[in-house]
Length: 90
Image (cartoon, rainbow, N blue to C red; front, side, top):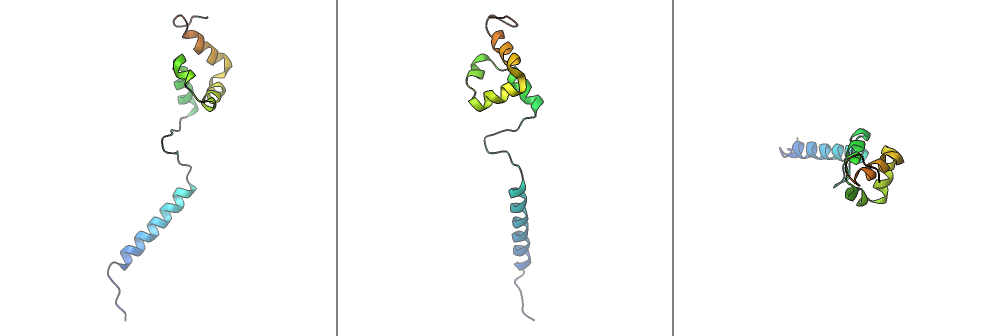
């Protein structure tokens, strides 16, 4: 009977485990590096607490998302409140 190296089983097991992990990773819906995934509630809360300067620095795509979550009236109210103190209308 041929002899096998004692580490053959270990290496084969690791190879199988890596293969399964790669398959799971390819099927996952992972968040890209440097990005984050927020629930709609958390996004609404974050957008509603932004200052005018922060809103102005958003990308066009982020502004579109903000409008979708808060609505035009919500965004306008947030921008107006930055004018002369909380709740003021410019």
